[in-house]
Length: 222
Ligand SMILES: Nc1ncnc2c1ncn2[C@@H]1O[C@H](COP(=O)(O)OP(=O)(O)OP(=O)(O)O)[C@@H](O)[C@H]1O
Ligand SMILES: [Mg+2]
Image 1 (cartoon, rainbow, N blue to C red):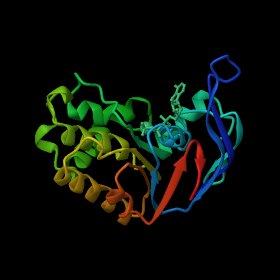
Image 2 (image 1 turned 135 degrees about the vertical axis):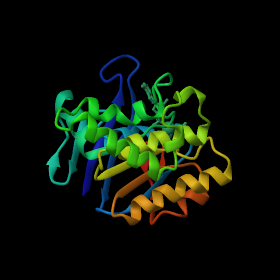
Image 3 (image 1 turned 90 degrees about the vertical axis):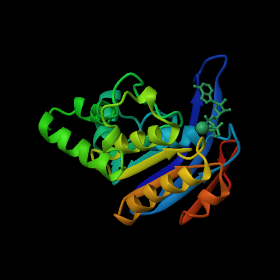
C-alpha cells in the first residue's frame, strides 16, 4: 500500500538554517497492517508521519500510495488526497477549540462538495457514537478533557473512512486507563481492515502493534 523510497526531508531547504530531519528513509507498509513508529524525541517520528500523511513535502526520494506517485504533487492535489484517503490524528489534536465536538468532526466535509450536509451530519454523529461521544457533541472542544479531545480528533480523522489512519502520540498525554480505551479504538479500526500507523514513546503501546519501526536521528534502524 505504501512505498517510501530513499526519502530525505530537509526543513528550510537551501537556506542557512537547513536541517535534514530524515536521511534516505525507505519503508513499505502493506494494506491492513498495524504499525508503531518509535524513537526518542527529535528523532523524526512526526516528520515521517507528516510525509506519509501528505502534509509535508520532501526533496529527494519517492512516495507511492496504492500505486499513485505522491512524490512531487501540488498542494491542491495533496490536500485532496489528505481529505479522501488519509486520516491524521495530530500530536496536539489540532482541533478548533471554540467549535463544538460535532463541528470539529464535520470539518473534513467542508472541503468536500460531494457530500450533502445532512449526510455529513449523519456520518459525523455515527462516528461520535462509535467513540461514545454523542452526549458531548454540542460541547465546545475547549471544555473537554484530554481523552475526550483525543476521541474527537480520532472521530474527525476517520469520518471520511480513509484507507490509511495515522496517529501521532495518541496516548501521550493520557492516563493508563484512558490510553487503553483509545488503543481499543485503534484495534477496532485495524480489525475492520484499516491500515493504522501509530507514533508512540510507550513500549506497551508499541508491543500491541504487529510491527515496530524504530527511528534514530532521521534513520530507520529496525
Ligand atoms: N518546522 C521545522 N523546522 C525546522 N526543524 C524542524 C521542524 N520540525 C521539526 N524539526 C526538527 O526535525 C527533527 C525531527 O523532528 P520531529 O518533530 O519529527 O521529531 P519527533 O520524533 O516527532 O519528536 P517528539 O517525540 O518530540 O515529538 C528535530 O530535530 C526537530 O528539531
Ligand atoms: Mg513528534
